[in-house]
Length: 408
Image 1 (tube, one colour):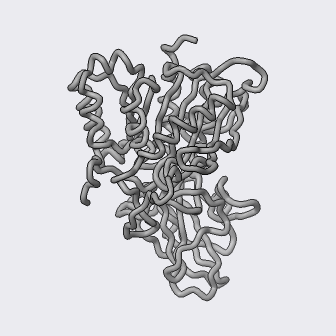
Image 2 (image 1 turned 45 degrees about the vertical axis):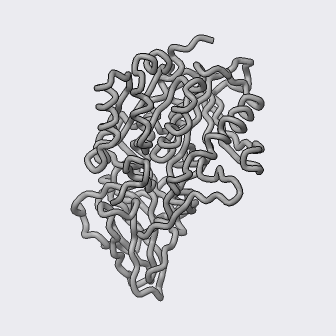
Image 3 (image 1 turned 180 degrees about the horizontal axis):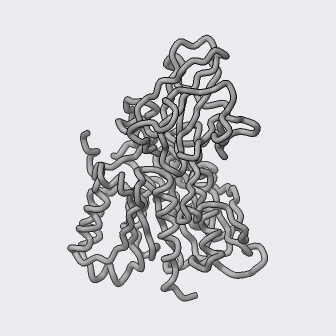
C-alpha cells in the first residue's frame, strides 16, 4: 500500500477482530431452533434479544431473520485479510445462522450482508465506528488482569455531554467530559487529560466502546491514578467551511480515509482557541501545562502529535495508543533530546503484539527515540491487534503515570 504523503504508514480502520484459524466444537453455521443453554446473550444486545450469543470458549452464534434472502454473510472486524466474510446457513424457520471461531476478548464491530446489502444486527446496539452507526459486540474476558474495565463496587464519576461554541469553525460542537468521583462535593481543581478517538469514531467512543470512565473509576478507587477530568472530542468534525476530511477508498465498510494534506490543522486551532478555554471556564480545572495531558488512539494519536509537538509549552504529558506518526515527528522530538527530556514529563507509546507483527512502526519509533536518548515509556498489549482491548489496556497503563510529578 502506498504511504500517505508526509505520514508513516499505519492502520486506521477501527477494530480488527482476531479469529482463530479453525472453529472449535460444533461446525461453523450449525444451530438449533433454540438458543443453546451454554451460549449466553451478549451484554451489548438490545433488551430481550437472545442473539448474538457467546459460548464459554468465545465462539459467537449470530442470527438474522431474512426468509426471502438467497445469500447472507457476516463480517466481524475491519474487513481486512484477517477477518474474511463468513457464509451464514439458512434454517427452516427463515433465520440465517453462523457460529464463528473463537474471537479475542473485548469489543468488536460487525455487520451482516444480505444479498450483498450491508445491514446492522437488529438484536445488537449500534455504536458510531468506521464512520457510521454499526453493530458491536463485547466478548467477555475471564482473565483477572482484564478486570480493570469491568464495573466494580467503587465510587463512580460522571460523563457529561458538553456543548461549546467554536469560533474557529463557526458552529456549536459537543465534547464528552468525565468528572471523577466526588467532583460535585468538593471545591478542588483537577488536572485534565484530552483523550481522542480513532478514525471513524466520535467523542462517545472512549466511553461507549472504550469504557474509559470505568477504567478511571477503578484506577482512582485503587489509588493507582490521580483524580482527573477527561475530555473527549471528535477531531474529524473540526472543519472550516469547504473543508472535508475524507477521500474515498474501496473495500468492505470503508467509506473513506482522511485527507492527509490538511488533516489535523483545524482541530489544533479548535482545541487551543475554543475547547481548552471552554473546559477551563465550565469545570474546576488546573490550567497550567504541568496539569494538562493529551493522548489519542490510532489517528487520534497522530492528531496528538500534530497538536502537541508545535505546542510543547502547553502539554507536559502525551501518549499515543497505536498512533499514526507524522513523518516529521521523530525529527522534531530528537532535535534536542536533552531539552526535550527536561521539558516533557512523559512521552508514552503503546501497541498490540498482533498489531506490531503487521505494522511495527510504533516499536520502530520507540527504538529510534531510545537511540537518540529521548526518554519514553513503551507498552505492548499481549495478544491484541488494532482494537479496543489494546487501547483500553493502553489507558489503564498510561493514566497512572499522569500528573505524578506535578505540584499544585
